[in-house]
Length: 457
Image (tube, rainbow, N blue to C red; front, side, top):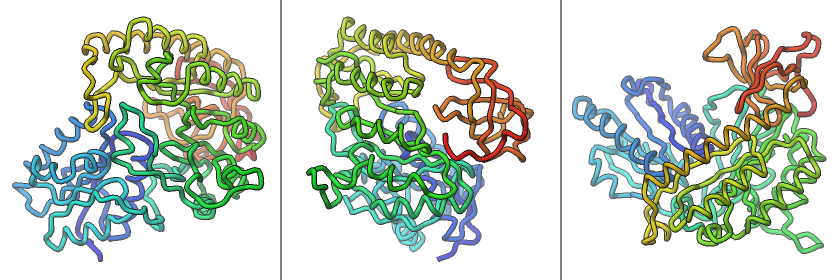
């Protein structure tokens, strides 16, 4: 089916998984013959790929939707789609709230967009939120970058954290086969991509739903096994993975990251709270002490590895003393980057029903204090880069200074330096670091002879 005169626009909220889903859905729309538009007001098909992790992201979706719903009264041929986690959570209730909607589809249905949209173009209002087995993706995504690419390795999540809506909206874990993942990476290598990030809501769970065990009795297809299986894909020079769960993080995985030259020394391992009682209430399945042991083990094998994480403040019942345990953990570990959030009650989660909710004022105060400490510790971590030569994968032009390019070190530090984006995009450049800030670096490229693709991070 072709729609040669239709234009589409996608707005994406939330996590890396959503960004990857949006790229796949854009690829489907391209294949259908629609043209991409950067301006939603010039588009005939508008898709909001939504996030429900926090209330403010959800409310922003409704604000955007309201504006386009009004526009639809003037342009009846406008097609409005809500996909992602809000769509899965609300289902048909979304149609009652915004009757102008044409399609409501959960994240498990992203690869079915063409079929669902065909039904819409035939005059139907469609809701697709039923649990399904995710269809292997054979569509070429419309990727936002020509240098780095997302590759999904596992969908869904089987954890039951008491604050998190993800298992309800993204379904149970479904791992892709190693062969399918490698085939996608080989295609990316042929297309000139340099870096791949393997994605999973809980990536350490990869493979436990696939058949087969080793002679030692462990799963045959773990994340570690997958890294060994894909690390030599031609053209791919850097491999990252996210997001890890402390409950399943293994020493064997750390050893693989040290041994495999293309796997970047960067670990994203959320801890959420530094207090054991809060972690137990969250249903996280590990202790503060176990988290410290994981970080110690990483730094034993790879002293320079970058470590980032997620943290929540103001969880129901969190005392000042328990919050200070989080501050202590952040102070002692010294993260390169930390994504922080104040607890937000989400529909359908146990913690949302508890009576010991904290005030917004307390949550704001704790978030501000944590963010202040995060900036201090990140700045301290950045100091180690001063004077060093780092290999930077050039991704784009610095939007604030056209004379500079920007890219990332293998430790995921954003780095700026003077250069020509046309000549350097997609190349790994040796850069001497001259300035270090909390979350970014500035440097000078070494002699042009040192510039080019590298065989390791």
